[in-house]
Image 1 (cartoon, one colour):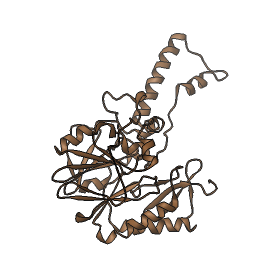
Image 2 (cartoon, helix red, strand yellow):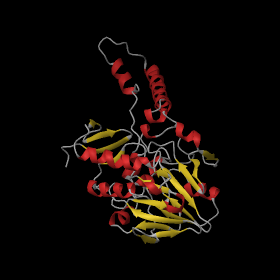
Image 3 (cartoon, one colour):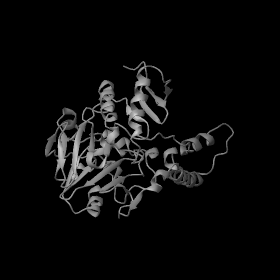
Image 4 (cartoon, one colour):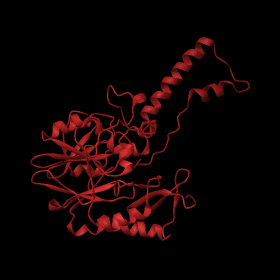
Length: 338
């Protein structure tokens, strides 16, 4: 998750029953109990639906006002144009606030991440282009691959982590649907109980340094492991566009999971920072789709300071801490966690 939420306190039916059971309390009739119980359940459900979490209250993010919005038929998605021939496909109604990018060439298009899989991203893509589409993921965490199964052509990094995740999963996907993770209504017809990351077929393995020719536009694959073993960034060198996936985005960057390699991450962000003179826009995979290239050096500086013990951690959830330096924040394992 890339946004941090607080659970709002809501009175439950159980708390009401406890109140009734206190010594000296007056007990209502059986009929009144049934009616009251129904009312409590309805009011509780309404309160959960109506009281938004902190991240939800912050929407819409002001940065989007400067971007051209592109209308699409599915209200689960919002689509913006951060650069010529690029669509940012944003999912603002779930706490990941994931962003996939549809990059257009003359002959085909590249979809960099397919999002949560909660609604139909393929339908949205079809409204944006009639070109044949190649899917490639910034990495294979569940919030980036949810729509992979819908597409015929899916490239993947040649790693064991990628192969394992292509089998699909349920546990991580289900965790994305808790009350504090949803802002507004889920799509009509969506079944939360059956929600999972569906398996997909990798049609071609790619490697660091590969180039993907879209026709009049070439996309360079840069391996940036650290967040995950299969993390990549994409560089549209001719247009100065650097797509960073979860290696950088403007929210707490997750570096605590078992698959995270901090040494690899340090090398990867240095590699990206070296490209800064050639970069015009940095496009991350969560929250906001545009950042200045100066953020790449700031990312290195902040991470070096954290590893040197110069940044004081702030406790987060059990076993995790936040390190914040300037506009950069990392969510990491607590210092005593190995």
